[in-house]
Image 1 (cartoon, rainbow, N blue to C red):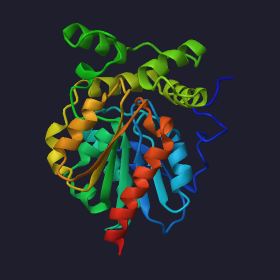
Image 2: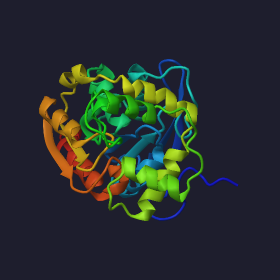
Image 3: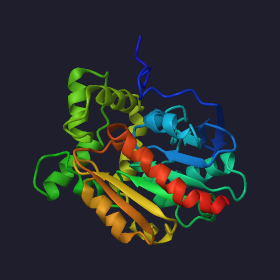
Image 4: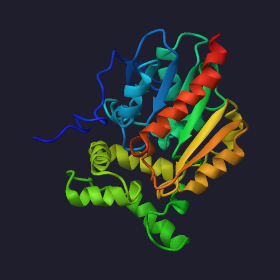
Length: 304
């Protein structure tokens, strides 16, 4: 019997949702949505990254739901959201605004946090009136807007065409990841996490990533390989904080610094020493505190 695509005990085990629902995107794609916390509390929306699921936010959901209404959803093809026929940045934006429309009343605003592809989702949605209506502030966590393959450091070669080509082949591989084995965990840790990551955190990440369907993983890898959302940054005018791990090989810290410099209203750049790409699991307190700070400073302002 195969293990579930997440750990079932400890701080990284996903808590039970208060409510589950389905949001329908512009093209009819159905998205699994979870709500945690009290109905009338300030709202937080969480968008996970490539090959992940709502389970990736377990630590943040558990802590933030004490005094926030936390809304988390599975990106199309991930977790409990069915695979789709369309994968592109427009779909990312469509899905986010569909989730907002299904869970937030007209005029209600939330802090929106996105990790990796979830951060790219926020960038893709910037400028849309539905996003502006429902967003008080944003957190971009371990993400980038362009040149993802060229700047990734998962292949230990000098910058150039050879490294870019090999990196693209590795990240875009069609082969199944297979079961979570000790070797698989070592590979995942090297590529996506800091060298000091504890075994329970590696296990939590590996279960989630290996649970992503191969076809979905490949389809989104093609989108990410050609990603260019730099023009969207000017439209991301809400107060936005940026977090990056200094040992991130997938979206190196140069991306976080570039985003902080380009955003119209950046309210802080946090560089986490010793952390890799999986910061919500590697540094759960730092990510949770960043969301809390945005809520305290900007969400209450728009709800008073």
